[in-house]
Length: 255
Image: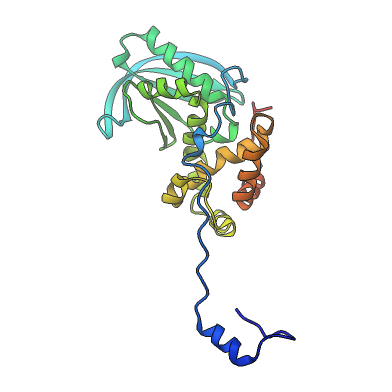
């Protein structure tokens, strides 16, 4: 809005200026395509895990989502109870297509340990883990983390398996409470920008999960990222960072 100031141009000139629409601000282009891929070193295999025990619980039918069918299906599964620090128990359900309990145990143990490397606050709502074959993306939600081992091979090759799990666990444990909360929507509005194209294109569905990884990077892994990346994240989403700070999530076993 134009205001008269001492020494300003005559009012007639200012009125002419008022008649011209001010240019619309150009939206800031997100700095990243997707944040699960910004740095493969945020969590690495040698980092500690909160997994304390994995026990075989037999074989039974479970209703599991399978992206190959794009549906919930009744599946014959090997079952394992994964116990994490704090006595949190998650049922890991491994599709019987893997052939035998020993093979299923190896998959359950591998992914349960990786899930144990995530901050405890991201496991708060995780009750089950579904593991299938297939080259399909992972998923979060439904009090669950969905894993397809064919896609996991790609994530492992690129060094981002743990970062993908963090993204999906944020869907599971943060979205139900915060994705539509007034405080989160206010943080979105205050930042007036998105950290990734994926968050921008799906602001209600993906922004929390896309923003948590960068928050984690600057607050808990700053020594593992470049100063330039840290400044980009801090400049793009300061209100979201403040929002996550305010949650005071349990970050164990992250040092």
